[in-house]
Image 1: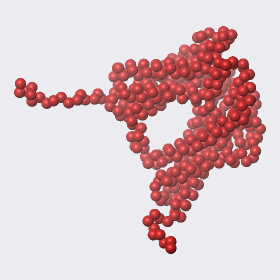
Image 2 (image 1 turned 180 degrees about the vertical axis):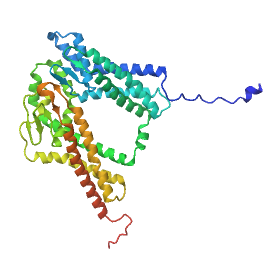
Image 3 (image 1 turned 120 degrees about the vertical axis):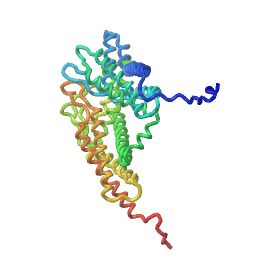
Image 4 (image 1 turned 30 degrees about the vertical axis):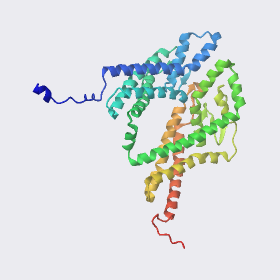
Length: 408
């Protein structure tokens, strides 16, 4: 009786250590399977619509399903070997679909791995990404035909990378660790990243306006290209959905045009402010926006002003982030870092937005990543350093805030 009364009250049960149980692994596999199935259905909607109305083609349902798998694999950066060449042009708009689904999957798994920590978020991403990569490789194996052969190794790697990025970001957001990770970054990095994002955002916004205006100016030509294959109402809707998946690619191409580098729409072609050399192009409505001939001479310098001005604004932002007075060497160094960082970003964007679309003439599509990266580096560096120096000069010319007012 005495021992019973004197026994200390039991506290709350301790939380399980960060790790993965068998139930969590099962949940991760089921979430990955659900993400894959939903992604395949949504990504294959244009193919399903075209197959449903094209009864005269006699395409078997199994071939249609393989076509859906091949399109879904392209969204993961998987190249398709075809007779005489390779298809490796990733529809970036379609790539956003599995990323969104993986974000939700990672957030769901973050609730299963406790306590909330970076290690638990990593486990949450892994238990989704690993089975997702295996499923992607399985889709690649199933989608292979005598004419179209996806790379199983690329599918495994692409599924793993996309799964880690999407599920990892979702897990960090669900666990509320994004702000903590940002606070641990060096101060210079916290000043640099918003400046780089601002430059890229401004250039992408200007590029989107340019691409939209070019397509609007050639709308009748786009309608002719769309009607060339007589798709009908449902087929036209499928063609529209397919075109929307390549809109981000077109915006990045337009950004390369603004930088003066331009892009290619085939071997031996060039579309740039200095002029365009275009041969025969596929009957794809989005390509109706391609300009013809050389623009007026003033267009090139005005186009280059966009990344230069964006760099100038970024340089001013970096200097303000330093707080107070900054020495001349530090001002130049901090501002100059924006250019190479933006160059790396745009080289990566060019690599993602381009690729082959078969063999022979269409084996080269999109901007040249190295050339675009170097050009953006030079333009943004010049703008950032110039903008920061102008702001520094203006700040040094102003009287201190505590100076006495000597005006009569």
